[in-house]
Image (cartoon, helix red, strand yellow):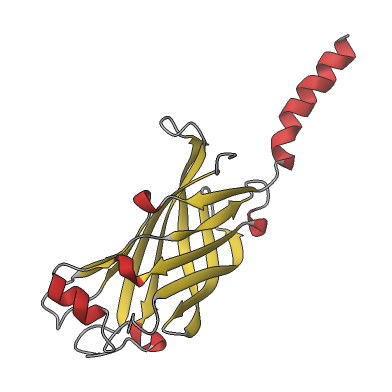
Length: 192
């Protein structure tokens, strides 16, 4: 009996080390991509990209097996005025009538310290794909108290050049570099 209890205790301790990857679906109500830039040196406005759709797989035991894939419909783009929303969706910038979404697909995930990751991936805007590196912080992974499902949350930052993606109008007076801040919450889909 003692051997059985010892074996059970050891397996309980070792099991988390062999945890399998978990796949989560992004919660668009709690996911936001915020872009900030400098406007002629006077201000630092921002725009939000909402309505994110996608999934992420997180392997706590081996983060290199983790991945993320996200689509940002440009219909979810919101700036600070209706007139500016229209301008951002015009051919000067995103040309959303022709290119209705932006996408990100990870190509590599690396550990970067406690609850920190470097996520390299392909960002596609206006049909142009370039590599981008996200500095990611794991905020929390646990059962969500309201949703009663396993949930995970991350924040991430990156800097991209608008001109790399064909949205460089008015550079350099309007900064070519755009700072991205991403916050996301994702949930294990419930069985139907």
